[in-house]
Amino acid sequence: MTMTPSRRQLEAYRLKHAAEEGRVIIYRCGCCKRETALLAADMLNVWDPDLKVYDPPTRCGFCKASGRMTVRFHIPTKFDYGTLRLRRPAGRRQLWKWEMFGPGMAD
Image (cartoon, rainbow, N blue to C red; front, side, top):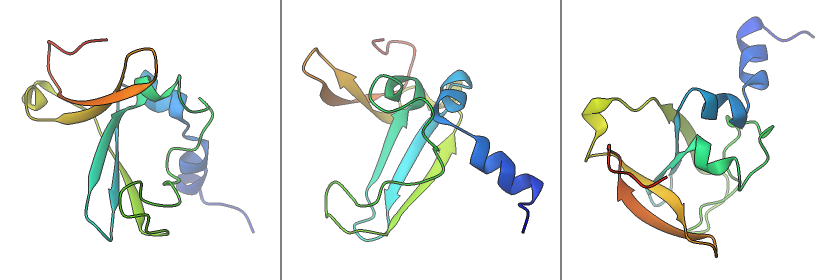
């Protein structure tokens, strides 16, 4: 059975493509309702650039529930400055911190 064209596009969409487009990946747990927003460009150093981004993680990092994760994407605009909270790597030891999306973000 062949895949439909829309299914092929989803299967071909990788982390490197999301980073090129400047997308934010938002993972949400259906059990504890927590959301984590990550810049795709930040994840290139952590995850494989050829990772299928439509496949969510297997379990929540907070409540450890498995099979309840969903993924969606967001293209940030100027209206997200100061309101979009991102999880970004910080420091040499691969520390993570929360910060607001905006023009003053550290790279």
